Image (cartoon, rainbow, N blue to C red; front, side, top):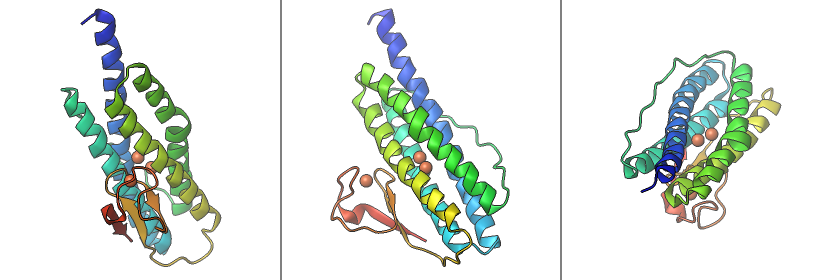
Length: 186
Ligand code: FE2
Ligand code: FE2
Ligand code: FE2
């Protein structure tokens, strides 16, 4: 193997580690945000935070599997979540999801494509698709925060983390796995 090949391989490996760190922290943060939303009486928002938290956990596990495949060891430092009001927590969540959707994952996918790492492309793509939905759902929740929304059911694909309020198709629109693979989180 040439030096260049070693170098390019480690770029995706370190991107996977960064993504693993990001997803692990997003999971931890949303679990705390859900508790806060419940405490403030925003039950519907709490459900959404729990569903997204589960999706981030799935993304972290998917990234970890690829890191292992590349003979790396997934490591994440979980920072203490900064919990504010639910309104502020939603704004912070939208910011994080938007960054992942517009900057982080597109860049990581580009590098993984250059390195022809199909497992990394797949796990990054799964996350990118789910973060796009999370950003949309959080934006909607922020806009309707004044409306009382009770505890709500969300469908989370256990394979790719795709998160939806309704499940109309027979298969996951992102990873194509059958509907049975979805978990119901509320
Ligand atoms: Fe994620
Ligand atoms: Fe997300
Ligand atoms: Fe899926």
